[in-house]
Length: 115
Length: 113
Image 1: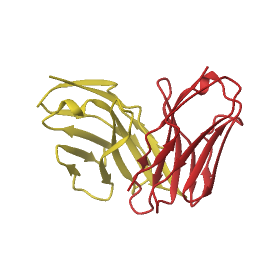
Image 2: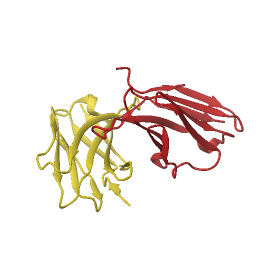
Image 3: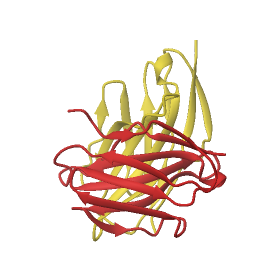
Image 4: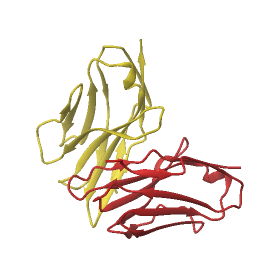
């Protein structure tokens, strides 16, 4: 079974600084999708960034970028120029098409942004 | 696009009562997911529909929980009878076949007293 691990339950970053959230996963598949979702205090789950495993180029979305290491099964999220609005729970997730979708979420990392 | 719509946003009920949560997925999405989120257990997948057909209900806790998707634009999650341990935030998410991204609704916070 696929699993997603986030080893940092909590992290903090100073406003305007850069922070990296870690994620590792376990799978025997070669083609799959990885995601980072953000859940602010409003509890709405918001997609931050998406990466297809067959693409070697790391995905970027404005201040958010990933470091995808397929061989190491690692998928970290880097937030540059951190803003107060970035404070939230961040979930790493994995999805593979295997007789339907097989979506697995990690336990989450709570990020605090310090003014 | 209105996004995934869930109702009610908050529900408070007494133990033993029936609770029905509702979800309207994004138009054109062919997959729908029900999740439960608690502090202790995190985000748990309860059931997943593809083209209105239940594909995986292995996450449904017990027979008190049931889910239906009578058409492509509506799904319900029912708990009967409800218990205090069912208190949680319940999310509905939908996904298109094109990019495998899940788009979440705002959630329903259920409190069973």
